[in-house]
Image 1 (cartoon, rainbow, N blue to C red):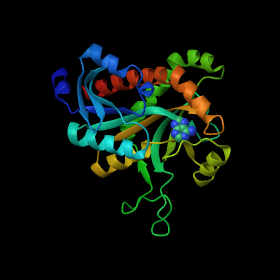
Image 2: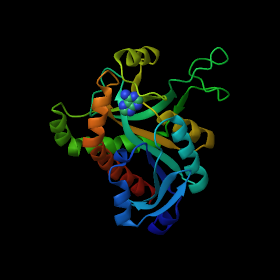
Image 3: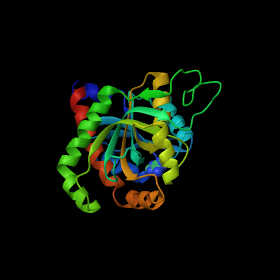
Image 4: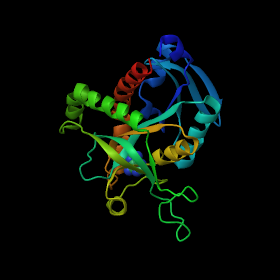
Length: 262
Ligand code: ADE
């Protein structure tokens, strides 16, 4: 696709729950193309081009309803060609540490339970509990994360006084709960042994995207391990470094996405 057709292409929706999780995306858009902001349902949708990709950037706010409503607006009011969600999550997998990155390949709502009418975790009438991220988007995202870690990982490791952050790919689980106890995260681990991370929006976006046939992908940086330290760890991570991750990942992802579309 040449520059003219890319400019006419359908935009990509880029979402986070909280402003710190978007990094510098809106200011980068402002510098590159200018930003036109449209307000719908108490959310500001920022329209412009960033790192070569026409995008609609917005904040979903927190939880599955907020995420689903925002995804629906991106699809209906902005005709997005795909949705990418970025933000932080609690680590669930035993090999997933604070500062690591998880790219969701499959997403599940861990608090859905319509038993005995439907099997545990199944979304009633959809006949499934798990929703797949778009393989191509997830692969481009994972590649951007690997390059981010290769290029900026030493500084991140120094920040955390740990080993280099790692990039994981697999199951992300979502629910309307901030998980903050060893007991609660232990219960999730038992129910979903392959779960890597827990958050509050991804699987809702994946469900809406599945229903409308819109590709989606989710990337999460691990801010805490969903135990008794979770709220302190989450707050510090959000203030100190969540933006550095999102900025570094999104700029590499969007540049690769633009190059693929040319
Ligand atoms: N997002 C970041 N940390 C989380 C946690 N512990 N539970 C749910 N969502 C989160």
